[in-house]
Structure formats: C-alpha cells, structure tokens
Image (cartoon, rainbow over all chains, first blue to last red; front, top):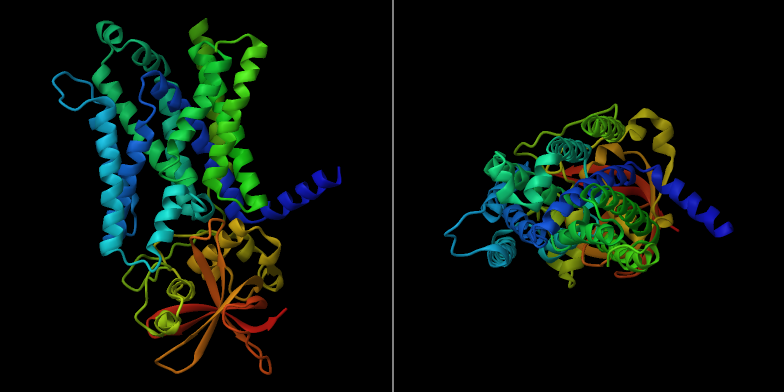
Length: 286
Length: 202
C-alpha cells in the first residue's frame, strides 16, 4: 500500500510539469491514430511501411537540419507523403513492388539521412541527436506548446478522416477490386490513406523514434486480432490496447528514468504476449 | 438503423476527441520567439567564448555538451508555454526547481526545456546533480564550470554553467556535484548563455 502511495505521490509530482502533461496528451493521441491505421495496414500486408516511411522522414529531417529550416515539418511532411503515395500506389507494370520497394526506400533514406547530418550537420553531438531521433528516448518530453498543438490538430484530423471514411477503408482493406467494381474511387481513397499514414508516421516518430514506429502499428493490432474477430471490434480493441500501453510506457519511463520510446514498445510487446493466453482462455482466434 | 448507430458512435467519439484536444492545447500565455537571424539553438556550436570548453577540455563530447548547454536555444523549437511560470510571478521564481528528485529521463527533458525557453525559468532557484566539467575560455582566460547530466541512454547530455558564491571553491573536473543556484542568462557577443549564479555546492 505504501508503495502505491509513493508512486501516486511521485506521479503527482511529475504531473505538475507541463512537459509531462504535454507528453501524455500527445502520446495518447498518437497511440490512438496509429493503432487505427495499423489495422488497415496489417490486413493489407503493409506492416513494414511504418518503418520505411519513418526512415524517409528521418532522411527528410536530416536535410531540414542541414538547411537550418525553422519549421522542419514543411519539408518532412510533404516528402513523407510523397513516398507514402509511391509505396501504396497500386498498379500493374511496376518493376519494384511491395516489400522490396519499402526496404529499398527505408535503408536508402536512413543511410542518406545519417550521412547528411554527419557531413553537413552543425550539431556538436551528431550521434546523440541521431540516437534520440531514431529511438525516441526523450523526444516526446521536449515538445513545445506549438508542437503539441500541431500534433493534436493532425491527430484529430487523421481520426476524423478515419471515422468518416470508415466504410470505404473497410472495403479497400478486404477487397480492393470489389470496392472498385462497386463504384468506390479506390485511387482517391488510397491517396487519402497514404496521406494519413504519412502524417501519423511523422507524429509517431516523436513518441517512439524512427526505428520503433512499426511497433505502434503492429503490436496493438495483432493483440486485438487474437482477441476479437470483427473488423470493428479489432479496431476498437487495438486503440484501447495502444492507449493503455502508451500511457503505461510514458509513466514508467518518467518514474523509472528509462527511454520513453523503447518502454512504450516493451509495453506493447507485453500486451501482445498477454493476448495469446487471454485468447486461449476466451477461446478466440489463435 | 445500424447506420444511425454508427453515426451516433462516431459523433460521440468526435466530441470526446475534441474535449481531449482542447484539454491539451496551449496555455494562457503564448509566447512566440521569432525565428530570425539572431536565433540561437542548443545544437549550434558557437564560435564565440561559449564554445571554448570544447577547445581545451580533453573530453570533447562532455565539453561540447557543456558548451551547447550554455548556448540558449531561441526559436528552432518555436514557442513554449509555461502558464505556471508566468501565472504565479515572484512566488514561482522563489520556488525551488529540484532536479535531484527527478528521474534521469525527466531531468534531461527539463534541462532541455530550460535551454530552449530560458525566460520561463529566469529567477528560479534550481538544484541539480551531475558531473562537473571545467573548461578554459581562451578569449577571456577564465575557467568555466558546468554541471552536466545525461539522458537515460547516456548518449545525449545537457548541462548548465554555474558560478559559485564568493568564498566557495570549485570542485574538481569530472567530479559528481550537487549545485543549487539562481537560473539566469547573460549575453556574450551575439550569444546568450544560461548559468546558475550565486550557486552553492550541496
């Protein structure tokens, strides 16, 4: 009991700091939107696209740092969106498809970004900056109020779009050809999906870093798929699991002094691990 | 009927999201530091005396971090809002910001925030524990002392220069110190530096 009281007191102590409150608000918003998109991506076998796009975003961020841009998002977002459109664009006659395209773009952008900051970067601690960006050790705790507002607005926009386009995304996810035959403009909705994914990936980099973004997309979805069967149930469960894991991860990292990004990912992994026996107990799908 | 239910659920979720967003958005005192040519960033390696620590200290990474810590960030991170700092005025300034009670992750984040938004912390008593780095400023011949802390992965460092009260002797280089002083900033050339003045070793 005394341990719990001590933890509560410590938590109350940290919550008086604005940067902790900002981290919680933004972290939970990012967790919600990334898990919602995760269901679509996992079912369309695009699980690794989060990693690819985050590496592209890292490369764009490196260029923005070298160019000393005051608002890096003006470069990072358009570049990431463009790459998302290229990767998700379905079409025949493409010589490099699917996972190969993701892999090439991913490693190429990562190498380009690291080379750029090493050769032309102005920071005194390039390795530290890169490490922090790739692994998200404290990124979420060093947001300005303007960045919090931007993250909140973008997350809200992504969530609203997802809610409004829920039926069409459902159709696109399970049978794109049938959706096209039914008169749904699949090209348009794939484009919108690509933009939403790119925005969420860029936001998620603030939470867990560029290398661990895929965890936010995959783990909550896979855990939810073990427990539930319908698309709606999996989507809702994925969001709930993601929010809980992000909350636990942020609080544990703040209290215990661990890196934020990896703590959240470990929480997600534990949730996935617990979902397996839970599914067996429930008699759910394995 | 089912479509109506979906719309109701969506509307409720949208309203909840709006509440969450409004709860997290901004504070009463919004301040924007302009991103002009005079802006300084934590990342910039200054050519002025603030970076002298890196020229003379044998440990390049530690000294560079101390130098960076002293280069106060202006605007690369944009505006930062701290209602508490402004709302309570002098009472807040007298309140001790005890970084020794915080975890390594939050200490790093708070010191980072102090460097990027020093105006919100000016006048506050700050207590921190870290490694003392000493470096000689070639231009003035003075020795600068900084208390440097690392983040959880120990790959990034932040620190603040400290100036002890009269009569106090400075600690050895690379020793662990707990220092308490008033957070302030000063100009040297075109650069703004942060330091803990009238500091005491605890």
